[in-house]
Amino acid sequence: MSDSCFDVEVTNKVGHIRLNRPDQLNSMVREFWVELPEIVRSLDARGDVRAIVVSSTGRHFCAGMDLGVFTSGDTAITPGDADEMGRVRARLRQTALMLQESFTAFEKARMPVLAAIQGGCIGGAVDMVTAADMRYASADAFFVIQEINIGMTADVGTLQRLPKIIPDGVARELAYTGRRMSAQRALEVGLVNQVFPTHEELVAGVLEIASEIASKSPLAVWGTKEMLLYSRDHSVADGLNHIATWQTGMFQPSDMVESFAAKAEGRETNFPDLLPVPKEF
Image 1 (cartoon, rainbow, N blue to C red):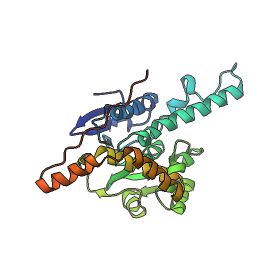
Image 2 (cartoon, rainbow, N blue to C red):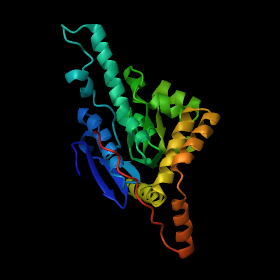
Image 3 (cartoon, one colour):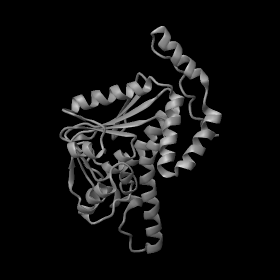
Image 4 (tube, helix red, strand yellow):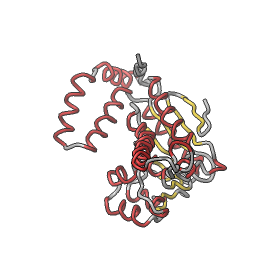
């Protein structure tokens, strides 16, 4: 499966999305923003995909937004002579919301999304990876909230998600200064879970972690992701109430029985896939 910005494959219940414009530093052109959420939703809808890995090709993971997104077509930020300013700005708000949704698709997917980051993770790429469940890096990786360096406020998720991942003061320093954060520093503050020596080892290692997740009950993993995201944005009391309600409907002892039986019999577990997402009527 191939799109203009991505290569996609599914192996052993793990979906692998690769950014595939290395000569352009995998910058986010207009097609990127349409293709990415469609791919994630398609993998989610299948029912047999239990984890997703997002990796990249070439020297850098992603150089961020291609400014052509805002200089042509219906997302242009410079209005025509006949365009009324209020309407132009209202459309710009719609554009921002659309771009945000491209990454929120990671959170809406029923399975975890793991990002494997090599080289530069710049601007919009930080927006993207902060929407993933976990992040991993090669030793040469670095992170930059580039928007402040070009005179704008980051608006596609970094400022909302990053302070929930790393200490608030560290996030503010990055956002205000536009400095680079190295892979080692990202590991120290918890932005990434692990640093691998090379790009090749990074991708192989993250795919291995995804495969381990894929071996678990997909219903239990979905519930876990649902609870972690809900608890991030709600109080402890709200989170406890939500898990009680979820378990009332979603907890099925058959997966526990299979776990115990597989352990007793010395074999791999065999859980049913999730059902496909219902198609629109």
